[in-house]
Length: 256
Image (cartoon, helix red, strand yellow):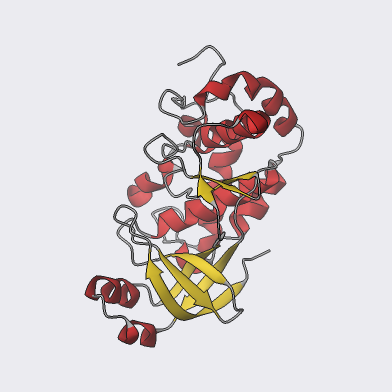
């Protein structure tokens, strides 16, 4: 099942976070979205990671904002006064990632006692996907209507950034340990065994296939040995399935 496609009708304002410069946009479905632009410096693989990890989050019982594909036309840039934003819009003509804007949401402030089981679930997701970007510097967690939401997954699945010379070794990623020492929720490691047992019983390779299938063809850049979108999807599933079959990556409750 592919993501819904929405046409961007208006660029509203930038969100100046790091170098990616995401922006708030409106769509022809009257929705408001955080747009992650294909023309940003991190490249298309960041968008791929966003889609895959958000899909996995939903399948293991976490809340993450709805995603759509945002079709951005060339004429949108002419109405933007900021030259930096103009350049970004011109570089992003075509299909971009849209994430539902959650009005009134606020960032994680350090108290998740009512959400301890959810916090352990977030830890499991980040360990499985090798996400290195959920620290105190950048928690990437929102509280909205008293629920915890996970956002910004682009720093996960680091392995695909090494694919320029060809798809690598899935078994190497499968056994790669994950360091929880800098994670904003590391104090909830005690809940990992129960969460892991529950997720192991529900997450299957079919789920991995379905999640990867949501990535648009236009974001799957060919690499040696995987020149077509379907071949690349197969590679992503192989890497994720190999990791799912092991537990060397799962931090123990007593680890740092």
